[in-house]
Length: 414
Image 1 (cartoon, rainbow, N blue to C red):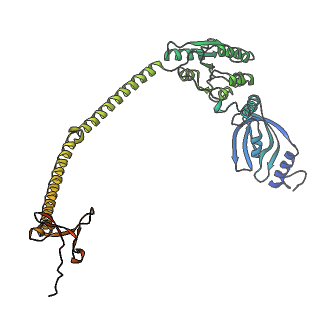
Image 2: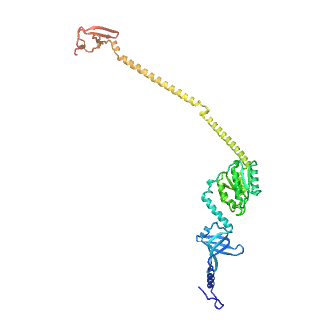
C-alpha cells in the first residue's frame, strides 16, 4: 500500500503506511556484507536458524535468520563469540516493525580462517585413516628412556622432569629443546623427532608445550609434523596442555595427555606405588598359597577319616569273613549232597543186589548157556534152543559146570 508523498497533521500516515515505506526503503538496499560477532545461535526446527550478530566496537546488534544448511556449510563449527562476515538482505517485518538480516553465506574471520584451515586438514587426515585407533601404539610399561621435545627452560620441561624424576629417580630423559611456536618450530621439532627416533634407548617420546592461543599452537597442526608422527616407530605422546582447542597432533599421537604433568604420569611409572603393589601382590599370593595348602590339608584329613583309608584292610577282612562263611556253607551243602547221594547209591545197590542174578542163583536157580565152538556162550531160554548133543555151560551160585543134552522134556500144560 502506498500513501501520499508527505504527511501533515491534517493528513497523517497510518502505521501501516509508515511501516510499508520503511520496508520498501530497506529492501532497496539489496544484498550487503556485514561483519560482526555471533553472540547467540538457536536452531528452531529444520527450517530456520536464529542468530544474534553484535558489533564488536559498539553495543549494537541485529537479528539474523538463515537456513540451517547455511550453518552446516560453514568451514568451521560456528560458536558464540566467533567473528564472521555474512552476506544477506535486510528484511523489515511490517507486522511488528522489526528489522532482521536474512543471510545466505557465512564466512569466519581472522581466527575463524585458521580454524577453517585446520578443519580442512583434519578431514583430509581422517579420510586417510591417520586417526584410527588401530594405528595407536601401546606405551611401554617400563621405558628404557624417555624423549622430551619442548621449549627451552619452559614450564612444560620443568613439569615433566620434576614429575618423572619424582616417580622414578633413575629414569633417563633425553631432552631436545626446540621452538614451540613460529615459523621455525616445525623444522626444529622434526629434527628432534628424527634424533630421538634414531636413539635405541628411547622407548617413548613426549612433545610438550604449556598451552597457548590458536595461533601459537599452529605448529602442532602442521601437516608435515603430523605425518612424521604417524610414521614414527616410537610411541609419541602429545602433551600440549590446551583443553579448549585441541591441535591435530592430539589426534595423530599414540596418546593425548591433558598437560605435560599428566604426560609424565602416563609415561613414567611410580616406583613407590609399583613396589607397594608388588608387596601387596606378594602378600596376596602368600595368603592365597596358605589358604590353598590349608584347604588341601583339610581335604586330606577328610580323606584319611574315611573308613576305606582309615582301615584299608577292613573291607578285605569283611570280605574274608563272608568268603569263609560262604565256603563253610558250600562245604556243608556239598557234604550233605554227597551223603544223600551215597545213601541213595547204597539203596540202589541193595535193590540191585536183591534183584540181580547172583541172588537168584543163590536161591537155587541156574543160568544155562549153549556153547558153539569158540563163540561166546549164549543164554538159552527154550528147550528148542538145546537140541540133543548140545554142549551146555550151567552156572550156579558157587560156580559153573559143563554138560551135554541127553534128552529133553517139554513143559506140560496144566
